[in-house]
Length: 181
Image (cartoon, rainbow, N blue to C red; front, top):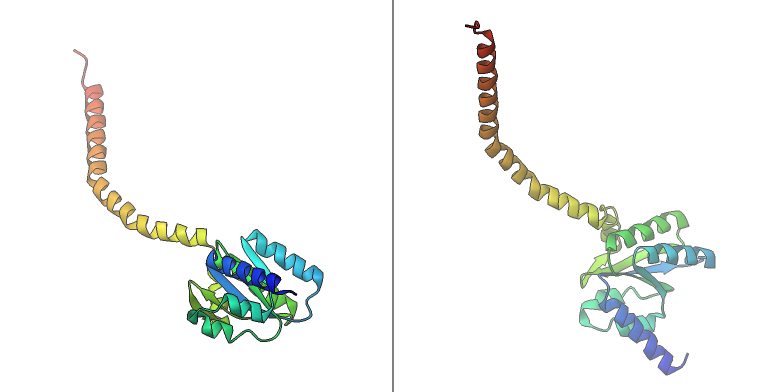
């Protein structure tokens, strides 16, 4: 590989890092081409990128001091997985593949919002519900007290309406019971 190609690859990895919410570093050994293709497609469906890169080129892309711990994991055959949109969805794909691959892929660690994250933390994050579900739960939590407040405020008005209706029905019944003159 010539120098220009190496510089270009390091620049591409840096660019992917800059537009991603998360990057996961994994160790892979013995994965077949079919398995890699399937995993790549599943990650792509979740707006992610699965990329094999040389450790020296990856270290260049992660040269900033905040990536020091991350760079320490760059040993052996490594693959980078970038999540552009929903890190949880990409992590779910990776952890599922890790479970079913029988040790062919092992998550080493990653960076989430410019913070180093261990493999255990990433696996815990992968168990979270998808982003849309979490947002729905937050909206529900916010709306719940408001709904209760509206019900409390509308209660007296509703009771007044029921009382007026009952009074109207009573008057109508009394009017029907009067003898005709």
